[in-house]
Image (tube, rainbow, N blue to C red; front, side, top):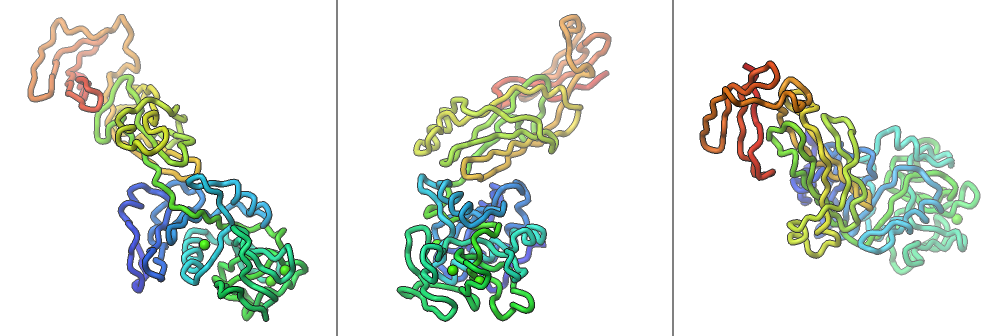
Amino acid sequence: MVQTNANLAPLFTLQGVLSMKRTIAKYAKTVGTPVSVVAILALLSTGAQADLVFEYDRHTYKLVELPATWDEAAAAAKAMTLAGDPGYLARIDSAAENQAILEAVISHLSPAQLANSIPNDGSEAAFVWLGGSDARREGQWTWTNNGDLFWQGDFNGAPVNGRYTNWGIQPDNAYGPENALAMSLAGWPEPFYDLGAIGQWNDLEAGNRLMYVIEFGAVVEPLRAELDQPADQGVHTGVGMIRGWALSQEEVERIEVYIDGRYAFDAPYGDPREDVGYAYPDINGSSTSGFSVPFRYSALSAGEHTISVIVTDGFGDRVERSATFDVVRFEKFLIDKDNTPNMNWSVASSYADYITVQGVEVGRDVYSITLRWQTETQAFEIVNIVKN
Ligand SMILES: [Ca+2]
Ligand SMILES: [Ca+2]
Ligand SMILES: [Ca+2]
């Protein structure tokens, strides 16, 4: 089932990560050894369309899975923000950071995705773009985040100011102007196997279309959400609400509602939620973080159903919240005025917070109905309907 690397302690908060079903892998920040993320990522199937987001040493990384040229990738990185600061194509300053990125990326991608990120340079290995370039001056390699020079020369060159590098037998400018930095996600097969190994760097022609890793100098705040109604393990009937709240530092963008696993509609966002405002006074918009939409529970068949909401924020983070509940209903989908329940011949009894009414006539049918006090809605609601 879950495989962990025996040499590496699981230092991330696994429970928190899993319970939020976020596509995020946290690494140990105090220990140089990165934690294997294979186990976590295998479990995070929700939000499969979302880009991989992970953290290492108080920085956040996002793997963008849609291949792009290096220039497109660099522009996309700059256009994204986290905590108000723009991103940049990943800058790697240590072997631990290199390993953290490599592990997160390769454990997340499918073979088909890897095959879609192979440059046209004969190496036949998948690569991801990083934020190094010598486009301005051949052999002068700089990081795009702040222009730091980190390498001078070709594969016989040398690092600058002791900065970390992890070149294969590279850079070699082999296919003309190879001016963009990439990390290999596989060993390079024959006849290039001796030129680079998995995790090593290569200079590539910037027009290749590869996946890329964006780095942000901040930790991503969790996307929070709760589904208040339907109540999990509750009973619902008639017309009710689907409602809850969602809150993110990066602004909530979308709330999708799924009924029994099928997309149904988007819920509108922005209802007043004083309680959430009190709980999270430091997050913008917390007091208007509610979502709600009326829903006819009696349109579902009697029996068990699940409603899920998937919340997406401006950083592309996603969380899912679900409730499984029972629907009780009269045989008729809608009870019109002429069939208003008639209780002239009924008998009511009560026990604890239950009220049972026997002999309720609805049209030609006779039912026993049980009501129970519901804390969520602050009302007595029908929790059982039995046709006599
Ligand atoms: Ca970095
Ligand atoms: Ca070059
Ligand atoms: Ca090269």
